[in-house]
Length: 102
Image 1 (cartoon, rainbow, N blue to C red):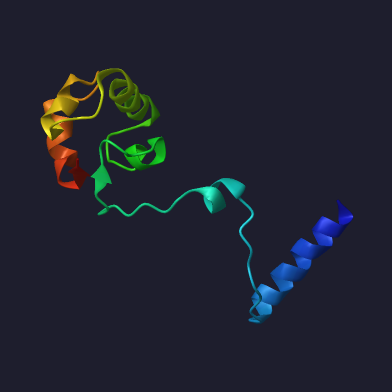
Image 2: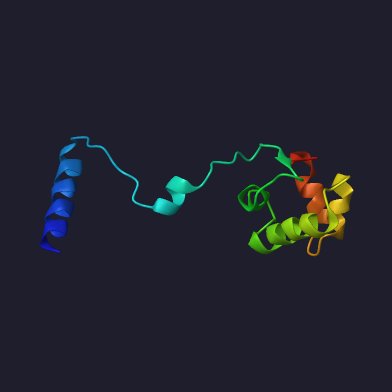
């Protein structure tokens, strides 16, 4: 506990004095997450949960519904077939269509 306090104080003094020092990421979750660009095309028939979640309006529940649909019904034949997945509306489909591919 005391060591942590001294380290924090030392870093504060260094930052105030203008001396630069390296910073390290402390969150494991962000270090292991794949970086998915907002413009990256998502291939509907191969996309992972993380890739699907990167689509605006698609959370974990909808992404899982897409994966489950794919497992039970087979690969998507058209982008419009996504409307058969529970939770996917025509409005949502139009918002994400530009990022989808088969």
